[in-house]
Length: 202
Image (cartoon, rainbow, N blue to C red):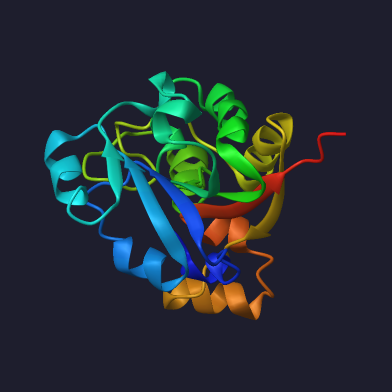
């Protein structure tokens, strides 16, 4: 899930690529924030069919086999929400997505936080690292996990500069996080959220 606070500076008139767009439920919010052309990538035929009624174009294909020409050119904003944890090689994809982004564009990512206190508690106190069905940090479909530090390293290594990180603000954990000045975000937030820009190419 994207923290919409991170998109306060959404580029007016933007071409937006939503990788893993699902049924296109974010279409109203993306257009409200200035998205003019919305392109989705979705491998589920049922979800893609629903998204086609909302987005300007939906490509039914894994992102790993696509190139920017197949998507109609570069984008001002690329969204990969809850995507990279499902990829065999997210590091290569982060590198490839640079060619899909306009020079002043941005990459918006969300992914589970493996440093979340519930995961750490189970691992340290009980010696458990159990997969579950139905979503969450330990969903059994996840292939990769990140902490904020390791995600930052992956982005920088692929040519991106992290600009803004999301902070948990809701529920009891969110209240505690705010009281700590967000210093506990790395333990309390179940999800990492970041906006990154392209590094200088000079």
